[in-house]
Length: 607
Image (cartoon, rainbow, N blue to C red; front, side, top):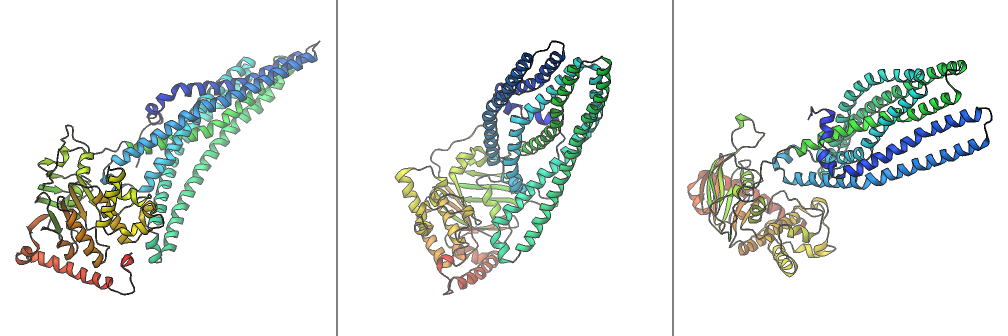
């Protein structure tokens, strides 16, 4: 991903965030400038001291007065530095927190399609490292770059007043610096962006390896994963070395040229002092001022590097923030009162955004109606679009043609909050969060107190997830990242309990029982029959036993609903349905064989 913004365009995008703290930044800037002025004032005191001390009749009192003035200037410089930090650190960290919160909020709002395209490590590096870089630049880099530049300008002006001839030698060194600085800006910005992108890729690799550690170990691929990681890490190391070399070369030029200019000034200055054109005090003051300016000149290199790094961080940040959220609330949303749960698919078409033109629609004119309170199973061969169809109901994706209605209202006419209160989902690939069992199950419920406890207990019972009570801390047990401390069947039952606890009008289940053994699945289905009486349910079925849970069955074939009826009706009249059911039977027989093995306990049969 590239960004063609200029440096000033990129930095200007921070203005809305910085605007509330501009007064504090200005105060910090003034304090930093005051500290620099104190540093520049000390050489002038030395000039007066030397000229007076060397003059005929000079007294010791001049030395004591000058020493006292230098002490006061040094103390004031330290105070100004401390005040600068006090003024800018707290507001800058507030801006950082607000930007990070805004970034996270935007990530939550962006579509599933966006998250399908972006690596989690890239988003993580933007949310943490890049925003931290921007805060450091606002609180330190910006202020010090301005103060350093002003210090150099003021120092050069003082040097001109002290001796214009010597100052011209010093200024002459600035011409090649400006030329080299322009080249440095271009090359360093490019390599800085490359480094930050590679850091994001490396973070993605680490996250994928940690989440997939069981797979890597099971297939004995830890060594190969390590080799791939080492290759990525080495690539990042080489980029960082190149970046460091670029900065080192620039710092060398920035340091060397002023030092050469000072050497030339010394030769010329001694000659001028010998001829009486410059006083000894003025010569000492000139070189003391030059020494005070040399530090800021050398500091410009790292400050410019920080600025260019901040520029790439801003560009990366806004690549995400500028991403459009295409699934939004309706302009004039409809609010249902007591929803019944009639769900109708009308000529629904869907194509994934990154699909090639020749790929065609995954769903090609779906017409289907679910009556309120009805449980319908959706069956079809693998890859026919069953899971895709389910994700259209809560608008995880939007239809590309046709429409879906609930009680006669198009789902796009609801607010997303209302729609996802009406519709609850349980996926085959369960995702749990690093929090307690209670919080995971009650995620979709607004109930509190005794009502929440009742809903929680009922959901766990229906989902046959009573094992949660036996965990080390019961329902308050932290189940670990993505619930990987639980078996596959346990995770699915917690996810199913979460969907039940939401008490939705429409329940969408994407084969939520695939990891359960047959006996446990039978108990879950008995519980579901009791609670689904008033809930409209669309369930993807990969087993005949799941089909048996449904009032009717819809057969998905070639992107369309090929037939709808009861299980017996479809068996009697549809050859393709018989083929699908036969393939499901084979899967169930294989699973049944695994379930009855005496050495496997019910809880861990498919862990």
